[in-house]
Each structure stands twice: as C-alpha cells, then as structure tokens.
Image (cartoon, rainbow, N blue to C red; front, side, top):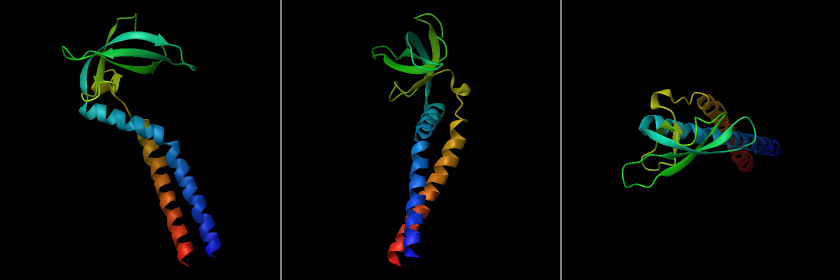
Amino acid sequence: MPGFLLSLGIVLALFGLFALLAQSGNYVTYRLMRDLKNHGAEGAAVFLREEYASGPNNRMYFAVHLEEGASQREFHEYMPEAPGPVGTVVPVVHDTRNPKRARTGLRKDMDFDKERPVVLLVGGAGVVLLMVGLLLCVLAVAI
C-alpha cells in the first residue's frame, strides 16, 4: 500500500508541476496586464520599426515618450500589421517605474480576460495536484 501511495503521489505531483509550468506564460501576461490597468500611466509612444516574426504577427518596436530629460524606453509588441508609417504616435499605457513594461492602447480598453480563466483553472488545478501529490508522498513515507 505505501508503494502505491508513493507512486500515485509522485504522478499527481508531476502533473501539478507540469500544469503550473504550462500556464506560467499566461500568469506573467495576466500580472503585467493587471498591473498596467490598475497602476499604469497613460502616455504616447512613437512607432520605430517592424521586424518579421514567424506566424501571423510581426514584432513592432515603440519608444515611450517620457517627461523632458528622461531617456526614451523602447518596448515591442506583436501585431498583425504596423500602426502606420515609422514615426506614428500611438497611445500607450506604461509602468512608471519601468517604462519598458508597456502596451499600446488606452487603459480602459486593456483586456486580460483571456488569461484570467487559464491562470485560475490550470494554475489552481496545478497547485491542488501538486499539494495532494506531496501529501500522498509524505503519508507513504510515514506509513
């Protein structure tokens, strides 16, 4: 019986760990978008250049306009098409502590609803599986 509990615990813990790793990218995106929506500063950015990336979206580079005397911070976003010719000014929401963390658009239009269910369901299930698996391993060793 302890061997079965230990095996089951290891399998469940590994499934939980894989679930947490699978949703880690969505978690980072969710936290970034939530922080920008709640604490970001609205401003403007200038479109600098476009780089080809595989898939339907290309990498667009922007420079955030900061107050006078501050160096411009560059960030990139993946978009299907350029927002206009080089030099186009677009609205942006950026983190005041680290302007490299920015997203084009207005704060009221920021939408992170795609990431939230993934983070809650997959991440929550991953934590539960990991904890149950570790508990079974501890019980198997204690028996």
